[in-house]
Structures are given as C-alpha cells and as structure tokens.
Image 1 (tube, rainbow, N blue to C red):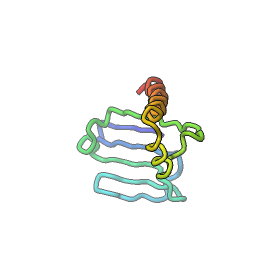
Image 2 (cartoon, one colour):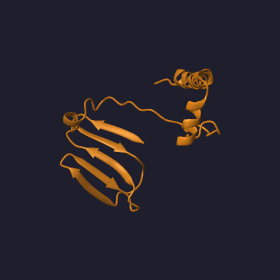
Image 3 (cartoon, one colour):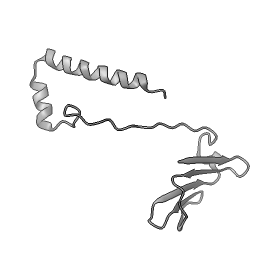
Amino acid sequence: MKISYNPETDVLNIYFQESPVEKREREKPDRILDYDKNGNLVRLEILNASQGVTNPQRVEYSVILPNPVTEEAKLLSLSDRCAFMQLPLEERRRILAAQTEVMVEHYEQDTE
C-alpha cells in the first residue's frame, strides 16, 4: 500500500495495489474510487483532503499479524463459556491470569 499527499493540490491518494484502472466511481463529490478489471479497489482519491481529513500529512499504521490458532485459542462456544463459569473461582482466576500474561507479552512487543 502506498499513500501520497500533495499539499499544492490538496489531494490525498491511497493506493492499494499497482494495477491498471478499468473503472472510476465518484462516491461523493470529493472521493473517487478506482477499480481494476476484476473489481478490486486500486486507489482511493480524496480531493480537498485538508477539509475532510484531520491532518493529511500525518500517517499512522498498524499491522496485525495472525497468530497460529492453538486448541486453547479457538473461540469458545456458549457451552464452553458456561462450563468455564462452573469452574471453581480459583481455577477461573488461574486461567485468566495466564491469558493476561500472554496479552501483556503481546502489547509489550507492540512498538506502536
């Protein structure tokens, strides 16, 4: 992905891929969407960007990496949740404390 802003023309472009544009749609008077021949979004163009974007010269991004799904990390069904609530309080606290440690490690490694 590539982002460019031209302060002289006040145009912000977000390029999602490098493909020839086959179709162009004006979503709103100041937003133009470009698509490739397969209908995939190629670019979002925002005209008069300084009026619609808080600060078009500032970019923040984050990358969310998928974690390998372990047996414990799978989503819990309603019956699993009910079973968890039936556990003794100390056992629930132990499980939650272990999950908290994993989350703390993740956020400590996050440089954002």
